[in-house]
Image (cartoon, rainbow, N blue to C red; front, top):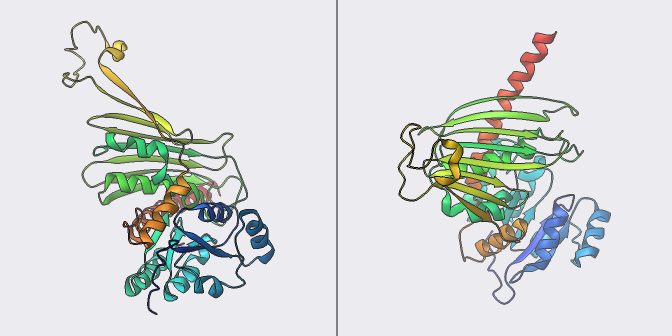
Length: 343
């Protein structure tokens, strides 16, 4: 099918497929986007679609095909297991797709989506929303070839997303950030985790090493008492500490004109590393109050309008999925071992 031309007066027509816990926020943001038109909402639960549509003042479409017929792009916010079915249907109808993370439940599904998009010239953007976190955006000028990365993403238990383990539910956010910042092939993965309150793994830890020497330690839990989203980066130019939940952080670096400290010949007047403030600059990082979801959907609008490439491509989503699945496999092996050992 020929790809539809994008209306120039009001911008592209964007619809939302799936208006559950996350999709309803997509519907709100799409409805409020400037230089775009909300073409409607579709959900297999018609009553749910009508409730969300009444809140955001958007039309409900009776079928997926009806929504695709009036759309230039759609947000795919259905369960992960249905991503391929919905995305491929949209691409074949000549519609660009924004797919919530993870891009698919497995690599084979992701590859079929990307192959269909390549064959038909469709844009695929993946919803790794932390790329648009204000703290990370503000920190980008300080990022320079990370050598060690540590993340902690902890959340209280909720029955949402129990169809996938915590790696694809939460850790994949940090997996994508890690891949985008390091930009090198993965050399080795070691991981462990256990189910706690669900049938799938609820807490996980992974250590990932890359060609070139970078190493990362990632922890994710959905059985924690409080919410934590910390991301830390060590590199030769300094140390970056970000609180992604608060949208702020700090960058620490040696003061200008100082060489690397060796623990013996400290700068004059500094008797020990207890006087760190005398030799280190602390640069506060403050993100603005922009909503990350609004930023990423505005980027999708611009991509399908031909104004800029998508900032998180389908290939980016596939790379994050591949590493997340490798971590999951390591954890499954660990879970199987612990069950055998305790038998």
